[in-house]
Image 1: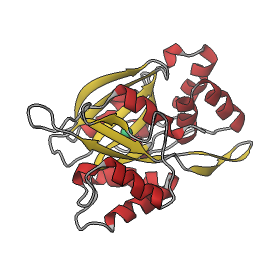
Image 2: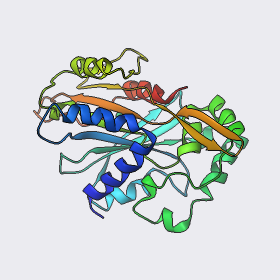
Image 3: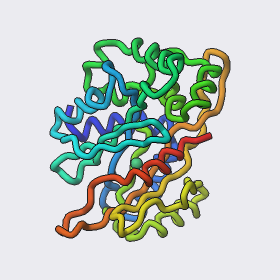
Image 4: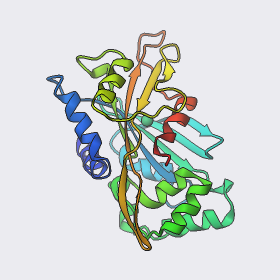
Length: 264
Ligand code: NI
């Protein structure tokens, strides 16, 4: 396994859940010669001893990724770290985890019951992050989880998969600002997440982000087939710090709004 192969596997699983992302990528690819570069990907998990952030990150850290900044999202009860590689053309990896200690016992119990079903060989493998779900799901439980946490409900259905990929606007040849990127995407009839405005962050905060709304896909539950939001595509532009290097962190307030891209 190398870094390229790891992200190729993640991408291939992701576009099964978000076929629109493949179409949007092609639209941008058609505007330029060089490959589209990803700013970051995002993974979701549960904070527990079996599959916490460090365990999910191990496939990346084995390949040279380093743990960087810590984030906490009070309202959503999430913690997160981002990971970076010294090769700056490799995407950053943003891994969040539901702080299940902050939830009622029966809610935490449902999620822990799921996690206990993950096979040991998957937990120890390099492909945990793209291994999907390892438990059965029913819609009643999905709705119960959704009423407590959108994030918990999403994880319950999709498990381990990239929640989003993010196009690096800095590396686009024919776009240099996020508004043009947003207009290009909207002109092709894709909807953007408007929570807190289409653009999250600012040049003075050194990071601007926008994202599509997660597309809804049909999911087979034990008690029926239902359409629910899956994955979305993000766009990010980074600005230089005083030392001349690009800011590589994340802004909690912006990330908090981006999380809402998977709301129903
Ligand atoms: Ni993101």
